[in-house]
Amino acid sequence: MAMVCALLGFSALAGSSIAHAAEVTACTGHHPALIRAAGPASLVSTRAAPHRPVTLALRTYVGRAITLRTDTKHDYAKALIGKLDSFIAQATAELSGVLDLSAQRVGVTIVVFATQRRYQAHARKHAPALVNNGGYYDGSKRTVVTYRFNNSMQLYFHELVHSLMGEYFGDHHFSRYTRRHWPIWFDEGMSEYLGSYEVEGVGIRIPALNKGKLAYLANALEHDTFIDLQTLLRAPAKRFSGASMNIFYAESWGLVDFLVNHPVYRSQLPLFFRKVRGGQDGLSAFAACFGSDLRSFEKVWRAYIRRKIRAPDKSSGWLFNRHSIDDWTVHEGGQWRVMRGQIFGTGDRNYNYLIKNEVPMRDFSFELDILIEKGMAGLILGNNYHGEYPYYYLIDVARDAVTLRRSYTATRIKDIKAAFADVPLRRWVRLKVTVIDSEILVRIDGKKVFSVHSDRQSFSLFGLYLYHARARFKNLRIRTEKREMPGWAHLSPGARPLVRPAGAATLAPSPQVKGKTPALSPSARLRRAPAL
Image (cartoon, rainbow, N blue to C red; front, side, top):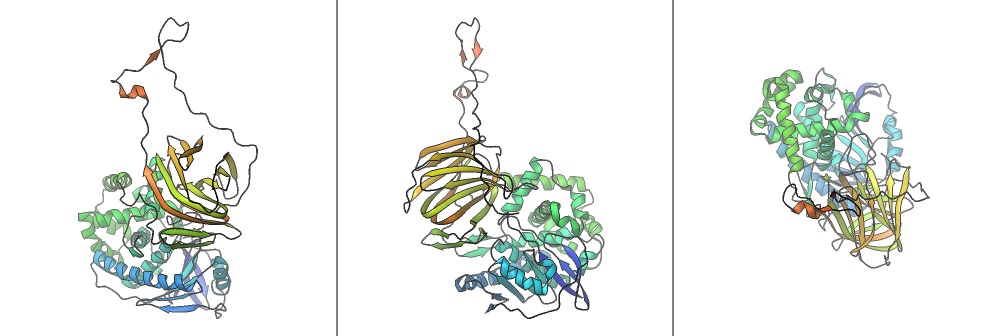
């Protein structure tokens, strides 16, 4: 039986949130196959087209364990094969250590098209049911097929972990996903856990904090949409697709992260793996290894997640390390490259985005130096919140104006505020956006441009974008801001200044002036934003 694993297309939440794994029954030639769509997981019937040769010219790069076939630019491909080899070596060592197994050497081929259009041309011939996905994994050929733009590098890493898991389970066809009470959370959670990375200079290191998944968990806990443990342990493949996909992937990552980092539970992971590999169902294996009191277990697990959310992140200061943007995700094309410690962006006819995930933040400043050579550039503020369009605010910066826009969907975007600002072309200016207590304040070179009320307080997505532009960015940073206390708050408890209104016979408290919400500008523009 052949196995093809499809990756659901993900064009909105960068880095952070990658859609993965689903089960779809299919037929390739005369052999039944499972199509595992990353993200979706419902079982449907389909039929793949007969095998035909690829018509697009692809160059081949052979690494130590990875073979890369691609039409991307040579410099990008050359750097990518090194990172893929580095990842598979680190992931193999880490996974074999966690499961107490001998390291397995796995050879995998990855086909990376530069654009979605070229990927779709290939998919129409080889996997027509997956044309609109982010890619697919053919387990029978140990091959991942995907495309660069709109996909995070973590998507490649996630699927490489699946190839390792297939080797350790002795099941590259993913037939285990069809077993009753198979712990899909374990497969997908481990792939998310090991696929999470951080950049070190021009290299990568795993495992690392998955800030996108942590943002989903933080929002789920805040809004009481966190899935209970029993539901997660029983979750069938269909839960890892569609509307429920993001939260199930996030909790699977969170559960594996908890188990691996718990001194007692980590020691039980090899036993759990052996039990499910030997045929025991996931529920009874979990109870035998981690305890049957799920309520108490979940209480401790949730406390662990909350501590990670509150813990200061050493890397949260600088968003860009001056060497690499491998922990950012390119959406809608454009050319983004790093030179001389700067991000150089060259736009095309579309809006072009570069997005990064962070842990959810309140009361902060997002600041950077920007040099616009032509066109319009800007910033994005958003959040990984389940079920909501992730890009909240777009801040346009042009030669003589700054505009704040609120996006509700990919096409429903409203102007909130616009003001004159002196932004000379081909000269560096300092742009600072501060969000404190539901107020957004924009400054250029230290001068206030405007401030407006924000209908959102928490943000975990930060990005750059271009519109018919060529621009450079450097010194990208996020700083935590402290709310200023009113003067009376510094007095002794209970003491509060009193004023006597004219003509009043008694003392009255000082009035509390609240910021006014600015009226929307008369015009509302529809501009294309990244699609989910």
